[in-house]
Amino acid sequence: MKLFIQEFDDKFISNLSLIEHPNIVIVNDDISGNLYGIHYKYNFDTYVFVSSLMTNEIYQYILEFHKSKRIILYHDIVNDQVLGTISQFCINVGTLDSNNIIKIPTLINDHIFFNMNKQRSKHIPCFIDHVEILDEDLLSVLYPNKKFNIRLFGSSLIRHPQNIGLLSEKDRAEVLNSSESCLMIDDLYLPEVLSCGTKILRPKEGNLIEDKNSIMTNTETYAQFLIRILQS
Image 1 (cartoon, rainbow, N blue to C red):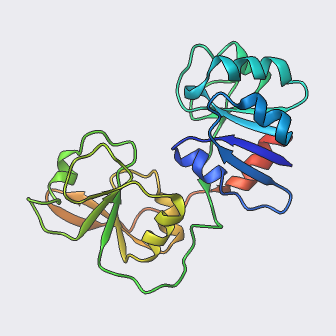
Image 2: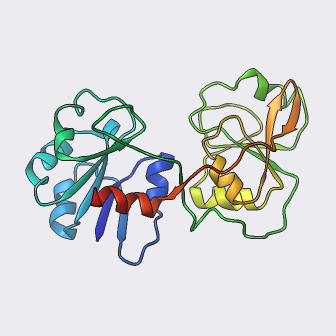
Image 3: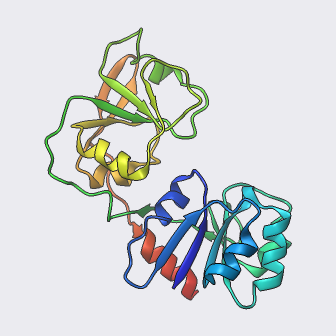
């Protein structure tokens, strides 16, 4: 299978693009008004489009080719232009509560996130993906309130001296495998942290509290999920 995935800075899309499977060839790229050129040049079997990036070009392409191509539509937001219209021609996945959308379960990219048995440092990564404002609990353990060796990753919006900035999923796995512990403010990357054998810390009233209760729930790999939805 030849799979084209629309480029998008998002955990699901990023990890889907990194699937390693002997029967799947994946290209992850920007469309930028060149969807038909990509179609005629490479002849992909399956396309993954993102709801929030829907354009007239993608809309028309789905109308024209949904009978000959498998089209997966990732609903990252509620898009009225998509729901109830073009979505009827697609395999719909996302986190939205809808009878017509396949709910994305807890997924793990096991080709990237695993315990590499590397030497670990005292640096404490903290992933702030999708965070717009740092909450009080996190601020209480950051400079100038405390001098813990915390490094913030995953956002270019937050202005703070401990914010390192964005990183790829492969780099994230390296960071986790190079650190004894990870400070977590949500559970977005809980499966990845646990898979890498990294201790979990939580911020609370100016202290870092080890979380020994978080466990790995039932997970699927991204490859398993992709194959399952294509066979549904």
